[in-house]
Image (cartoon, rainbow, N blue to C red):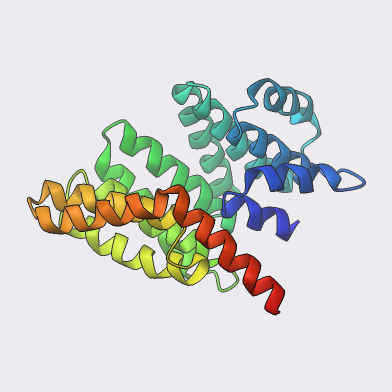
Length: 238
């Protein structure tokens, strides 16, 4: 199941779906990952069926994971009000049970932070986002991908209220993503795009153009053909 977690974190949703469906006998954790992958792949009807059928069979230790996945589903299907209510209730239950410094706690807080930011509640979004980051920084076994995601998420929130601080967080996310994925990867393009917009808001147009052009080059089909060619050559040599 750690492999499934890794595939989810890195956004490899089609592979995640395939691997989760191969888990035999099916586990609740694997089925939750199936539902998340289906949601990310916009296979909404199939995801809804899983959430509806699984609800009564989720053990307490996986309830927070299930509720976070369902909130993500609700958010994706346009029910942000229901998703926010669900996440707030889940976080209240986790606090009541003393589960406030776990991987799942950080995920709940990150989702809440992103949602509140989208609603314009930036101060609360910053507070929850920084709380999620602090938890992740103190989890020794946490994948670096999740730590990078926290830096990026806080950059997004601060881009609305403090551009200089936003850039500081993006600057921390970028080397982590590069160490994980190299310099040609969609997540690098996303960071560069985010930085480009912030530089534009600061009227630092040269820096804005440089970052946005880099993102555009990374996102071009030729870049990914080159990346796949390099990966294939590396496999042949190993």
